[in-house]
Image (cartoon, rainbow, N blue to C red; front, side, top):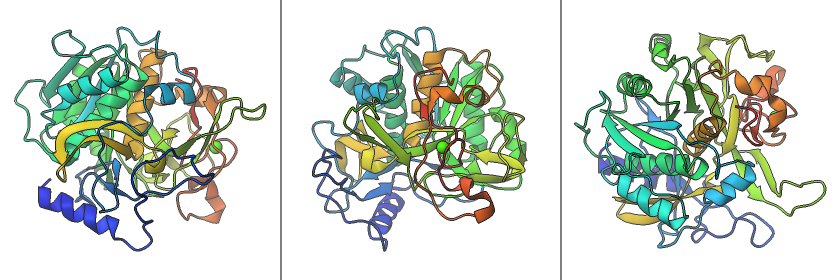
Length: 403
Ligand SMILES: [Ca+2]
């Protein structure tokens, strides 16, 4: 990505009709009774050309339509997310490796991760102690050129994996470019180097030759998560692959703990999450939804709304800003679910994305919200309801039992 393109993308989106005004920087989403709406912009430029992927993160903007950055974190941190999803993060995950596949190099990935983990009291994860490893798409150390947008994406991904599974090792695989060909090669490398779980926070609009590339996401014994997209109703690849867990998006808000809401959180559909019926990929055996003869996206979901975004530390400046950002997009939920797979530790025995379908009671069903307009004969493809729906799949994690 060229820096000028990134700036254009940010300004274009910030000024788009209908985009809510900047809200004066992050605030507690529940202050004042109503949830304030902040402007956010895609971190990667787009739409990408056919066969090229765009990262699925959106960064919160300030009053001047620039990425909001602060000296202190203000989005959700590890304890928030672990609590909301009832995760055994303190005790599980040892011996598991989460691979993060992204495009281009983040030269600050390890040092920014160190700041994040120190801030939140997580154990250090470094090259020196064997927890962190960064490789190029061939498994070597000839890293690609740096890119500031994808670098924020990389910071988000490695920090989310850390937030959910602090005891896991992290393998960052940097593809040479944002082409599906290079990203797919990076996935093969992640599997070859022993990853138990592989997280992918990117996608491309569906294209007719995508079944050719699907084989690179077919790694039995490895759980592979892919973000469903940030553009609302519609299907992207590789989320459409039968061999992955497609991760949709939600809006996750704090609520009072009551007898009717013992969880203390509410969760609804994020309007930006991708979903729908694949044009080119056949239906996996474990999907039985009636309105799509092919593969339906998504399978599960988790927080992705920039308005209920997560704290990310990035010192490799984007638009001249560095520090703590607030980031959303299904780029949050994909590594989050990857972390849950690692905590469950069952990747060697689960069949692709089938596990949640056999354990829907271990997920929080999302029943409200929509991500766009779709056929009334298959409204669940774009509208949440009781049980399976497109934007949120079977729901969000309630512990690790669904994985
Ligand atoms: Ca549902």
